[in-house]
Image (cartoon, rainbow, N blue to C red; front, side):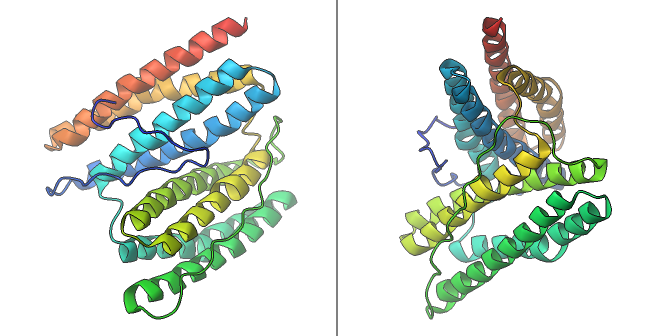
Length: 303
């Protein structure tokens, strides 16, 4: 998009620090819409990475390349610009406090509730996964707490980054039966994708400020969120299907953002005087229309 130049993104999705946002406070609805946008763009990045891997397995290298290039745009242009507008990235201490809050909620509330509900609905594999992730998020919280003490007091050390247990995601149908479990998986997938994207932004800021140990902690945790948590949930959710189905899923999502979601956000932002945000959504809607067209062309070429 014109407002943010495209930046190369390594395979792990490293991103540059978000540029400084304007000093003028944004309307609460605009901020809420920016958070929705970041969640959607982070999810698209994560899903398209899995779709690309499936295309590679089917020998469809051109489609895999399209999914990966689109994923980079979603993460390193669209999400990065939204994060800048929202002021998502703060000081290293502020970023740690934000992450501690999110990890605490997932550890103590969200994943425990999801596990209980999945167990009650007979989705035992999902219940086990949710319980395991709840424990992981508790460890992430504890590591971030230790890092915060080191950053704010100068005492103690930044913990070593966790190691991701990478999960492969083959194409296949959902492995859960209850509608409630499916809805909870969708919520969890979006949350893990957003955590990955935010932590990579926080890592870039930590590197920019010279705190390499903290950057490594962010990056290692981000890998767990994407390659372990998101991937394991994607297996149960049946996120990845054949490449034709994956392309249709991507087309529907991109068209919805281009024609409905982002134009609505732009109108709301313009109505309250948040002109930079309105311009961002108009530009991004045009990008998403282009993505939809590219995916449609790829689908047509498959015959």
